[in-house]
Image 1 (cartoon, rainbow, N blue to C red):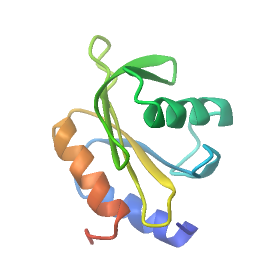
Image 2 (image 1 turned 120 degrees about the horizontal axis):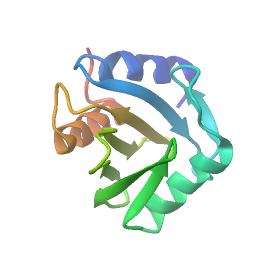
Image 3 (image 1 turned 90 degrees about the horizontal axis):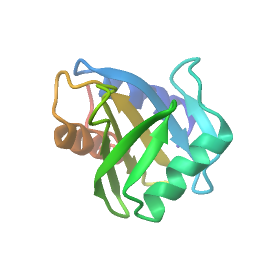
Length: 127
């Protein structure tokens, strides 16, 4: 996914209230683009992707634990159960990158966020 398509994806995701951060990872876990200046290291990004690919029961984002609720080759949905830190939802893109968003429990529920991110990642949703 190129930068313009990533920026278009951010706009499409923000059609609903609740998007905190969005980032795009390569298949190796390298940060390709971020929606803003928020703390995310290459190590943390790679660990998130490894957690997804290895179907781990939880991931860590910004020092908070998110329990994995849905995890397959195409989509990820994880929720911070105890701290109220929202959700991590993601989808693989047509190009093989990984579009991931940190969302609040506003606008959509977690599985709706997961579906929305998937549609955006595959270019099936236009704002």
